[in-house]
Every structure is written in C-alpha cells, then in structure tokens.
Image 1 (spheres, helix red, strand yellow):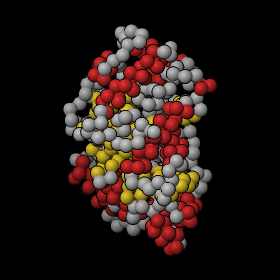
Image 2 (cartoon, rainbow, N blue to C red):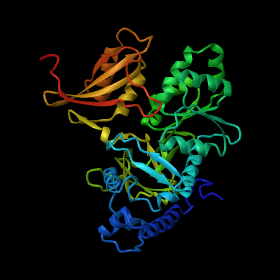
Image 3 (cartoon, one colour):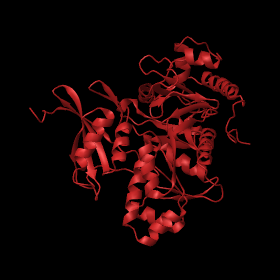
Length: 436
C-alpha cells in the first residue's frame, strides 16, 4: 500500500510521520561520507545524532544552490550529496541553470523516483482526474528536466497518456482533437499560446478540443495561481485550471485543491517545509512573505536538507498544514526594487492579463542615471484598440504605483517557450532619459 494513498487529516499525525522519516533520513546521511555528513559535523553535530523537528530547524544549517554547484564542481560530475553510488541510480535529470548559471545533474535510485511519482499522483487526484477515464496530453518535449518525466510516468499508472514531444503547436492541437484529450499538462505560458492558436484551426478541430478538454494542469511558472492568468486560460479553453509546483532538486512539492483556487498545498508526508526571511533566515509570521525552504523526506538517496528554493511565498497554515495563498508569488532572484518598491513579474503579469490587449510581453530593467527603471516590451493582440499601450501604462501606474514605459513590438517577435518563458531581462547599461 502506498504511503501517499490518502491526504492527511487534522488528526493523522503528520508530524509523527515527518519525525520518523527525518530520523531515517539522518541515519542514512551519517552512513555515507560526503556533502551532508560533512555539513552536519561542521554544524557541531556528532555522528549518528538524531534530532527532533524543532532541533533540526534550529541546528542544521540551510543549503543553497550555490553550495550544490560548488560541490558538483569539486566532485564531478554528480557531486557528493547523493547517498548511493551512481551505479545504484536509474534516472538522470538536470536543472535549468537559470539561477546559478550552471545546471546541476541529478541522479535518483528507483526507490526515490517511485516516491516522486506518488507525489505526482496526489497532484493529479487533487485536480479531479478520473483514473481509467481521463486522457492526458503532455505538451512538451522530453528533455532532461525532471518534471516532464515524473509527471508522465506517474500519470501512466492511472490514465491514458498522450506524448506531444517533437510536434509543432498546431500538430499538438490537432492530435489533442483526434485523441479526444480531456486533460492538458504544460506551462501557463504555453497553455496561453496553444489556446490562442485554436482560433486558427478548422472549426471541427476547435469543437473537438473544447468538447472533450475539462482540466488543465500547469506548472513551471507562477501564473497558475494568478487569478488573471487563470481566468484568461479558462476563457480560452473552457476548462478548469489547476496549479502545481516543484523543482528538479526536490521533486513535486505542492498541488491545488478542488474548490480552493489560487493557492497551493504542500505534500507534507514528503516534505518538511519552512518559510524564512531570506536575509535573517528567521521564520516569518503567518501572512507574511518569505522564502520557501524544504527538506526532502522520501527522496532518500538524493536528499536535500533545509534547501533554500528561492521561491517567494506567503506563509500560512490551517488545520491540514501548509497552504500558500497565491501559490508561488515569484522567485527571489527575480525581485527588483524600483524606486523603493519590491516588484515581481507575477504582479505585472496580473495587470497585463487583466488589461486584455497584449498577446505576449517581456520586462526589461534598465539603468537610467543610476536608477533602476522598467520597460515593458509588448506584442498587441490583433484586435487591440488604438490606445492599448497608453491604457496599459495607465493601468500599471494605477494598480502598482509605478510608471512603466510600454514599447510595442511586432507580432511573434518576443520569445516563447513550451518550458519556462523568460520575461525578466536585465540591461545594466546606462540609458539616457527620454526627456533629457
């Protein structure tokens, strides 16, 4: 019987389960010389030490991605954090390399891989997917990114899975229609792109897609929990959107619950979560924002202890555990301070989607007389009104209190991706003011 067979209830003893799994994890760490055994000894812990959940949070230092990169460089090619030999591993994955520049290669044993598949099964079940009935279309190419493979393999245990790798967007839509797909799995940005292209297809293809599709499971970007993005996607497809988030380093972490859109529930049987102030590493109060820090409890052969994910969330708990209103609010390394105000791409995207005149956009940070400024590059929709740019600039000023210049770009000129779309570009060079 799977240890993930049912969500925890208020009296299910999740803390006891976490403690037992943490004890087992620490014993495995102590039994394997390498990155984490050295890290625990450096923190003053003796070999074989067991810790309560509270002691663990206070005595074990956090782990940063920069530390993992350094460890991989010192112990190529896979680093020394794994608790088994490469010969005992069966799966390879790799991070995107967007935050530290150097992608990390990650190995998993069959046991750790299966534990992550069980987490993904929780995600699909929470989205209301029907085992033996739903047909899931996976609209991405199968590269080394962990999320694609774990999602597909987990789904294959309960649903009919339709791979869409190696196809154009139009070919994917046509295949969805022919196969009568009921669920789409992709990033929010790519779901937007596919949804907009539906209108260019023959009427019978459009009708076949909309007649069958009922769920869209998105991940990879914060947009899935942004109300304006969700509303835009649901209007395009006529299907309910469900958010999820995870990382190659830790695995599938959270899911959206039926009847509670715009937030994410942590899979607490598999992860010990904390929300910390990124500057002080102290816990933040409920309702305040901080960095999500995770300890993996079931991915035992490739664990991470108190890993600083770089994800910005609003701290919150209820009777069932951690629940983050607004989902992943952004990445700490994407936050910019503009005239004393913290700005995240997700907040700007919410205004852009609500405005409804823009097909795609990208944000540029530029330096103007030693001050940070933002510029929004935008492709207008075909039916955009003549004053769309001024209207969007006014909306951004009214809702965010910032003046962000709008620069129109030709249709199709801005980058699009089926993976994570990069909408945040820094231009360090000096740019003179327009009125100087």
